Length: 205
Image 1: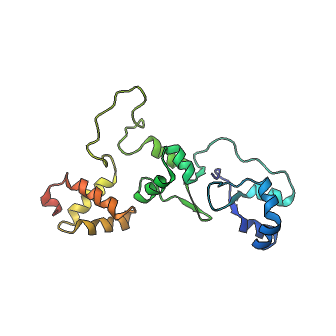
Image 2: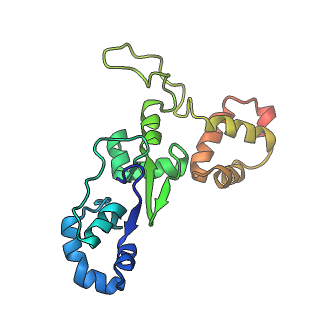
């Protein structure tokens, strides 16, 4: 996680701040640095560090603490997101591909998501009411009519079917994936669901 408002730097940036090559930094300086300055993304292949902490280390000053607590603008890794949503990291990436989450923000090659977006996705998932769904002990509401009920992409699929009457569904799906993100296969499923609610004369399917 990268705390809100805290610039992050790579080891290449730190080597430049230290006035040495990256190779020299990693061979001579990185081991000691890593012992004192925490990696912000321990579950990522990329090592990122807090700029203020790195500068303090290079200046021989005490390492300042990172902000305590959570902030809506913290940037979360896929593992952080998975923990909040109760899913695995592969599903996080699928959500980002299919449009349930944004593509995220790329910081030094690592894809991250603002905490506020993830909390909103958790508490207001498609198909849930304003309160974020049924609470423990409350009566369960009616079942969904289909898996995509409440998905805003369904309306996009309906409009595409009407506008492209007679066109092959696979072609429509490919165009929607290119325009809106997600996979053509997901859009084909959305189109199939939308077609069941749209008169055949309007869709051409």
